[in-house]
Each structure stands twice: as C-alpha cells, then as structure tokens.
Image (cartoon, rainbow, N blue to C red; front, side, top):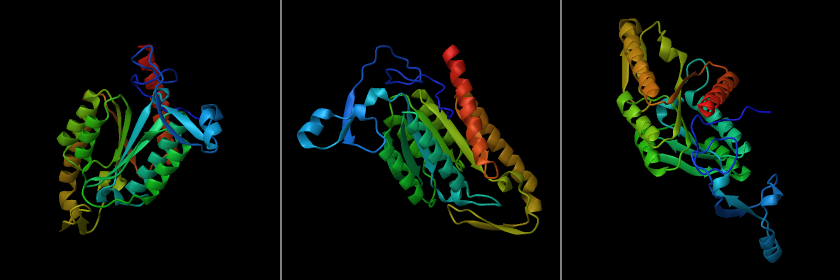
Length: 287
C-alpha cells in the first residue's frame, strides 16, 4: 500500500478519515453533481436522477474531503534553467503530478495553481479522477516564461483560501527572501500547512565555472560576462546568507522547507517527504 500524504496540522471540513479535524460533529454538505467516470464508487450515483433522465450523475460532498491540497508551481523563466541534469521546471512538474495523483487516490482533493507574472492556470481542488486528468493535461501544457509573480500569488491564495489546507509550493524562489517569508507567514497565519520545495541545480550551489562565462538572467534577459573565479567567493557568501535566511524564516513560521536538487533521485525525494510527513502527523496526533 502506498504511503499516504498526511497533514501535520488538523484539517477542517471533515467527518471521518485519516486527517484529524479541529472540530467535532461536522456535517456532510452536498456540493455538486458531476458526470460518472469509470472507476467511481457507484454508491455515490444519484439513482433518482438516473431513473428520471437515464443519465449517470455522481454526488459530491464537500465535508467528505479530509484534505484540500493546493499545488503551486512557479512557471517563471528561471525555472527552465538546466545544468547537467533535468530542468528545474521538469522535476517540479513531475513532483506536482505525482503528489496530485497521491492526494486524489487517497480520497482527498487536489488543486493546481501555475504562476509566472500572473496566474497562468488556476484549478480549484476536487477529488474525482476526471479532475486529476485535467491537472495532468494542464501540467503538460505549462511552460516556464516571464518574470515571477509568486509572492503576489501566494498572498492572494492566503486571502482566498479560508479553510485550512495543505499548500505545497514548487519554485527556485528567485525573489527577495523577506518578501517570500512575508507571504509564507501570511499563509501560516491562516493556519495552512505549508510546504516549500526549493528547486536548485548543483551548478548554482557549487559555482564550478572555469573559464570566462556569460551569465544570462532568464527572467529579465540582463547578461553579464565575467571571470567566475573573481566572484565565486562573494557569490557563495551571498548564496549562503540567502539560504540561511530562508531556512530560518521557514523554521520560525513552522513552514516545511525542503531543498530539492535536480541531480537527486526523484523517487527518493518523494519517499523521504512522505515518510517524514507521516512521522510529523503521528507526532501531531500524539500531542
């Protein structure tokens, strides 16, 4: 059996399931009808509608969804950077697709938000198989371009999503760390369980360039030709300060920070994440 994706914190809108709720006695609320999809539980068929119209409709109930997962994918141009391994964007996209699959197939709701300068795609969370197919088709169409609008998009998400949710952000976080931490704090203030996947390439961390190199800002198209050896020490120092600021802020706001390198094994990244989440959820339940 696959390792479930669990929240560290109580989720709202549940009646029963594998995610703890902060409320007791919640009621099941009818949300909408949708067309039957092969593989659906036929116990959810509305037999009266079938008898009247000869059409197969499924009943959807909001409160039956234990967890709402929002998968936020940075589609800015910097995500297309590629060193010796995969593009940051391609690894992030694969992680998003797999986690959406896990969320839906454990009976929870998954949504997708793709962001560059503005929201490129905004798919609200649902839990049926047809919705999962829509997410995968959307991911297949998405491509990184333009500057980042991630900070504004996350603030907007914090205002829009009032019920507690699991929000996972996939980005290289090319933005001011204080601005990033401000939107992380905003999301945590709304009681969301926030996970940030920081996509980096080994070349960014090591800066092992030997000859004069032309560096190109993929988002602004600004370029600079320089001797790497002359700036390596200062570059690594500034990178260290940036990463430590980001990690410290995430720790302060109880945000799950996860650094992912493009040369890491994709399966190991997912397995480690799911196992640690299960351990954190168990500790939260015990507490």
